[in-house]
Length: 200
Image (cartoon, rainbow, N blue to C red):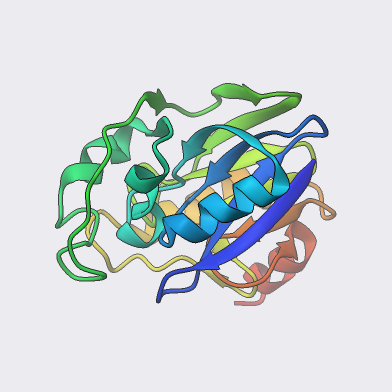
């Protein structure tokens, strides 16, 4: 597996382009700068199959339309893709062209992109349909869990209680060496974040 991180947009969102050894790929959270993402895809010679949005906030979905790829999102955030208040485009980053999702995701769904198999983990709290994406010993955590921090819960649909439950029940039960790639900031490990969480 090859993971290419692009930091996009004014909110410095991590957009990940994930590929297997045969150049089959998918994109996680293309939050802005579709041209920059397209150039990387071309330069790397990738065959990108689809986009997965970890949640529906504007800084994670703004470039969906510009990439022209099928969009996958959890069912509880699907309607928010086209709702300016729910996706926060009425507050941040201005208007954009929304996409209708091609595939609705649910907890424990399994998806393939080339030789990559992934499991969808529903982790509500930052948003009702927030998800993490697990591939072997790597988890893309969106805005659920960060290096040295957790997602905010003061936005529409947020729940501090649900977020804590998601982190404890879905993420911190994973092995210490599992690497996390969050929606903002640097990568970390479950072991590091478990220690941080227990001492918070």
